[in-house]
Length: 98
Image (cartoon, rainbow, N blue to C red; front, side, top):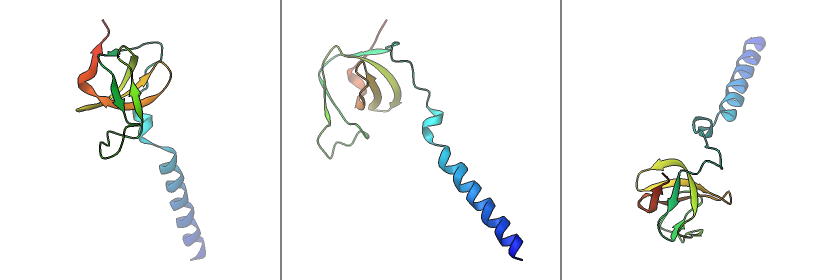
């Protein structure tokens, strides 16, 4: 009986460890920083942890900033700047680089 309980405990621990090592970020492929996809059409505020407008933005990106589009999230998109700052900005200020 003790062996079965121990085996069950080990299995649960392994599942917990495996679950902790797999994150949602593994499904997101982050483009290389030197391959900018868009430029900002206007000065725009950004939010580091998500498009949470109930609080003040974490900063403002200047118009003309080259960015990499990481993820389109509807009216907001997750982007990364030339300086390596990641944040969410309004999707309508993104202009594709041709």
